[in-house]
Length: 233
Image (cartoon, rainbow, N blue to C red; front, top):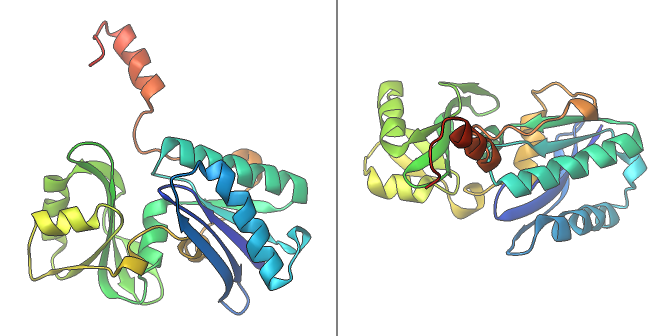
């Protein structure tokens, strides 16, 4: 199957094509951009299809990073995938951004910890045990403080490879001979990681695809504050 992967969950807008039969990434483009992802992602998809001589009609499925990450970026990616899947009558797969990050470094044997910046001292994080080919989560992905993550990794024991846009700050704040940081090419989100993560997930109909923020969006927080008569900060 020809699988298109899209990641718009962070600063990087990325698209990739994976041949699932041969497990070959046929093409990938990633751009660390200040532009709105809606301006970048569809031209990126068209570019990799053109470079590989493929058509949209050749796609057997589409995978997208469904969160956590940027609220706006996630909505843009999920909306684009839903529209394409409806038009092509193919199924889609929403994958965890944290799992996709770990898949970028799946050759590492041991614990891979994905760390994404949230707000203040909070991070989105999850750690996985990797055998070099598959991942097993060691705890549920969640929003937590850096101190809480340090405790989770201490309980897990052993060495851990850090990836994600929050990896460098966490590494600096928690110096340890048991912690390693992924190289730049394995530290940020890529659509190739999204494709690889999708290989172990179920594909669904596009109307079932949803974003997973791991925290309440601002509108929900404001509503709760009004209901509880708590003034906004």
